[in-house]
Length: 425
Ligand code: CMC
Image (tube, rainbow, N blue to C red; front, side, top):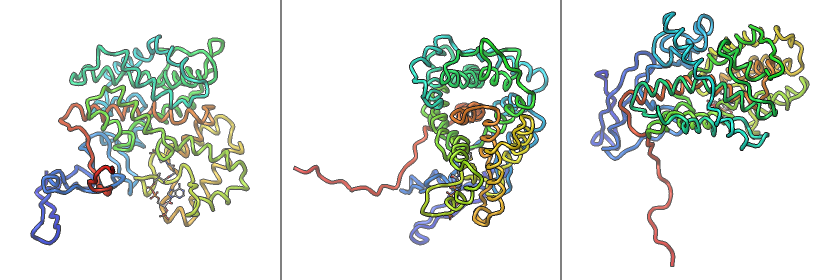
C-alpha cells in the first residue's frame, strides 16, 4: 500500500471520506473504496470501466500502448519463442518451466487427454445441429460428475489435477462437438502428437484416414491457442472468478466462463467476422457495409474491429496477421474471394477517418477467424477454439483467487424502482 490517500468530499468538506490509494507494480494506482459501505455509499460503474475487481499477478495489459504481458513476458516474445503448453505452465505457476518441468507438464497433460467413455453418451442427447458452444457449456460442467475424488478446492493437489484435466480435455471435447455435428465417429487423442497437432487430428482424422497435418498449420493452431491463453479480467474470466467465489467446483466455473465467452461482443466475434464476410459476399459491397458501420441509426458494427481495452493496437492481432499471411500462402488461398474481401476491408478501415478517430483497429478475432476458416474449421467452432485456448487463463485466475483470501462476489446496485408500497385490495 502507498501512503497516498484520496479524499472524497460529499456535500461539502463536512462529509469528506479519506480513501487509501493502492499502488500497482505497473499500471494505474487504485483507490480502495471498500470502506465506503460503512459510510452509507456504494460506487456506481456499469461495465466496470473504472473498477479493479481483484488483485492479480498473472497478466498485465496497457491498452493505450498495446502491451500484453503474461507473468511479465511480452506476448510477442511468447508467441515467437514459447509454445502453448509452456505458456499454460507459465500462467499457472508464475515462472517458465526448466527442461524437466516442461517435459513433466507435457506428460501430465498428455495423460489426461482422454475423456471418460460414459461422457461420450452425453453427446447423443444433443441434436446434431446444436451449436457446439451449447454442448461445451453442458459437457464441461458435467465433467465435475466424474471427478468427485479431486474436487476439494481447498487442497492444492486437487486444484492442480483439475487444472491439468481441464487443459487436456478441452480439445478432446471440442473435437467431439465437431464430430457429433457432422456424424463422424469420435477420434481418440494420440499421445505421440503435440497439443495442437493432436487437436487437428481429432478434428480431421477418421478411422479410415488420417490426413497429414502440415507443420505450418499445426504451428498456426498452437499460436492461436497461445494468443488466447489469458487476457486479464475480461468478461469470461470475471465470470469464472465470480462463480468461483461461491466455492463452486472448477469445472462448473469454467463452464460459466464458456457461457460468458459465447456472446458476439466477446469470444463470439471471430464467428461473427466470418458471418459478416459471407454476408458482404462481394468486394463491390464493402463500401455499403463501411457506410452502415458508421451509421448511428444502424446497429451493424464491423465485426473484428475495436476493443474494449486496446485503443492503440492489439499486440496479438499483429502476430496473428503474420500467421494469417503464412497460412493463406501455405494453403494457396491468397486469391480466395472471401479472403480478398477480408484484406480489402482491413485496408479500407485502417485508412478511414471514422475508424482512425475512434481507434478501431482489427482485433485478434479478425485474423483468427480468417485463419481458422482457411484451415477448414467451420465458423460455429471458432468460439469453441477460443474457449480451448482461454482455459489456462480461466483456471489460473480461479486458482489465484482460491489460493488467497477471497470474499464471495456480490456487487451492489443503484436502486431506482418503486419505494415500498402496499399490495392493492
Ligand atoms: N464498428 C463500427 N463502429 C464501432 C465499432 C465497430 N466494430 N466498435 C466501436 N464502434 C464505435 C461506436 O459506435 C462508438 O462510436 P461513437 O463514439 O460515435 O458513439 C465508438 O466506436 C466507441 O464504441 P464503444 O462501444 O464505446 O466501444 P467499446 O470499447 O465499449 O466496445 C467492442 C468495444 C469490442 C465491444 C466494440 O468495438 C465492438 O462491438 N466491436 C465489434 C465486435 C468485436 O470484434 N469484438 C471482439 C473484441 S476482441 C475479443 C475479446 O477480447 O473478447
